[in-house]
Amino acid sequence: MTITAAADGSALGNPGPAGWAWYVDDNTWAAGGWKHATNNQGELMAVLQLFRSTAHVDDDLLILCDSQYVINSVTKWMPGWKKKGWRKSDGKPVMNVDLLKQIDEAITGRLYRFEWVRGHVGHPLNEAADVRARGAAEAFQRGGVCPVGPGYPGATASDASLTEPANDIAPLF
Image (cartoon, rainbow, N blue to C red; front, side):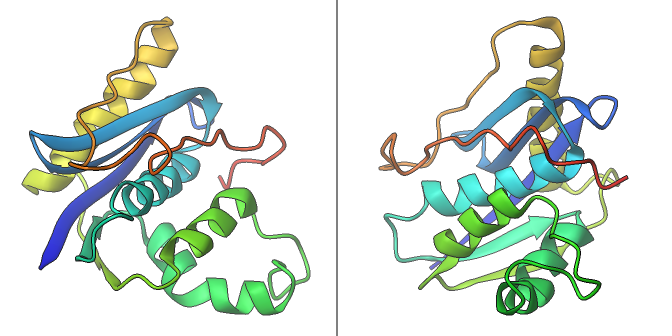
């Protein structure tokens, strides 16, 4: 069986109050965020949390993502970055390396694939993830409670452990 889920991130001000979310259906989704992060960090965290939340099942993952940065980071660039000690071809450190290393660990032994979807054009799963990621960012912006969602059935708190991005990561744009 394949789990199909959308993953999305949102940052108000980029960087600024930020949120992330993954979404399968109205009964199976999760969201979170931070007071200050980038959109790319939100996108990466959504993917990381999706992998962690489904770690207890043997199903393949189809991850719908509107971020070429995330898709390319995980599927194309990460092997080379790892070989170079998490450095880019120009010798500079890889940005968001803390999240990327955690994703690298989470994908070990997993069967998954990414599918790019254009954001904000009405794709139902992508729109649902976007609404939840933006809602998390807005909750952090106003100092309110962030909706976290029901999560994935059977996942434990340790499966979906949350990690805050390092404060010393510069935004990508």
